[in-house]
Amino acid sequence: MHIYASSGLWKSSKRSGWRFLVDEVKGGRLLTLDTSKTFDNLRVMVCEDFGIDVNMVNIELSYLPSDLVIGIDSAPVFITNDRQLKNFLTYVKNKASTRLCVCIRSKAETSNIKVDLNLNEEATESPNRQEEPMSFEVSEEDVEVDESDDDCNREKDMINGKSVRFFSR
Image 1: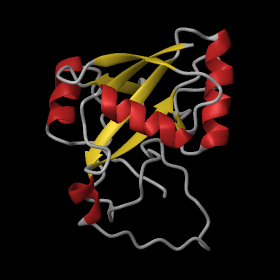
Image 2 (image 1 turned 90 degrees about the vertical axis):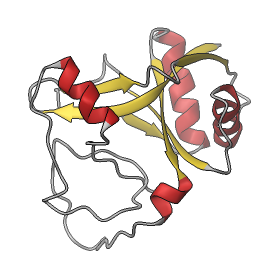
Image 3 (image 1 turned 180 degrees about the vertical axis):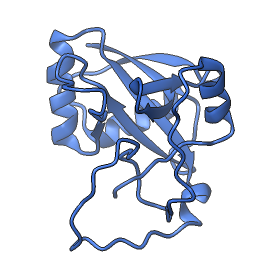
């Protein structure tokens, strides 16, 4: 099965919900996947096709199942293991237009920052929460919700790194 993958960043706004901003330099790739592929196989394939060293970066793979999205605050689905990859492949068999979204970060960038999490605390809902590797501390001062519908401002924000991303390992 053919899967279209594009590199970029997820952004969320209260007005327009979740949106994937494509990195115009890295662009997209066409991947060939079958049900025998593992999550690790997919990670390596994505890195090879985008011309990046799998040992130098952390990548996250995700998609937005548009027909299952209930509201604009419905977050993307992150693929983090073999079972979730199988779910994605099953989903795209019926929804060929589903894009695999690839977020790439250098390991040096994510290893310098520490997170202090208390898993016993009750989770709070946040329309700007993004599921990515939890590799840095985020305070209220660090969080900026993009309320602009201006594509130019969104792209500038992406280029300037104004997005909040969390990773779980």
